[in-house]
Length: 157
Image (tube, rainbow, N blue to C red; front, side):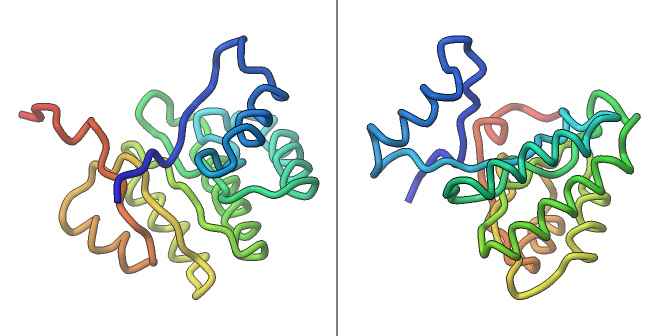
């Protein structure tokens, strides 16, 4: 099966209500998830997480994501990204929801968090997986699927 695990709707044409309406209008095709993206983790991340939790508590979502770590552009908030990631994993386990992991230049850090949160209730997908064979095996050992995106078709050397 081929599926798109997520879409970012940043256009001003897609306000909060329009995104919710997509799910309502296409109930067999659109399944919403909620999470704090790692590149949005800044000094106010606890406030942002509170908003995510508020949404998770007030309606049904099908996954928690896109969560994880991104150290490609900025390494300023590594600790905060790890804390936000771990918090959202705990919520996913409590709610029995899969996670959608964003991991860019951060496999060691992501695996460190996954190891600390390892349990039978942890499952999900590494979207747009770009790691090595060994990293793929390790991700699978945490009950994760691997999303293979267009990036895998680019020439890398």
